[in-house]
Length: 139
Image 1 (spheres, rainbow, N blue to C red):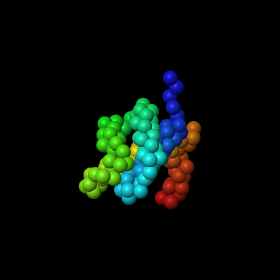
Image 2: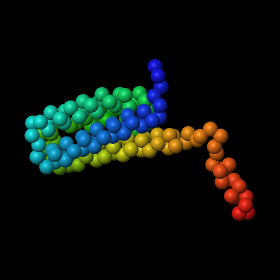
Image 3: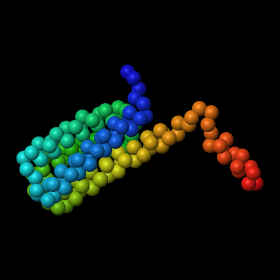
Image 4: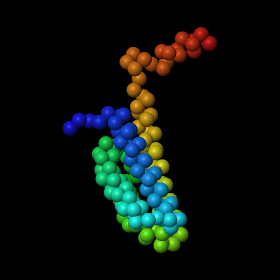
């Protein structure tokens, strides 16, 4: 099996975080109680994509957080927009808070991967070689 490049892995995680943003859109619809049957279907579809793509992301990226279990728990605790619109404010806030923690976790992973991507210096290039002479002149 071919190992994905850091660029491909970054793209995979960026696409995944975009799906998380879409999930939040539906949480906001549930909060406002302004959704239709098409929104319910799209909500279920985005949850399916999130569950499936999670496996691809976890196969490509080792991350301590968010865990598979935490993501699955959030997805299973949000069965429908109707359910979310009917639960109490405290439950909905808890779901939103958990969504936010997971989203920030993915953003952190993405940032770490971008750092690794930047760390690949050009062959023969070093930071100290570039600035070494300037530092010696100033001394």
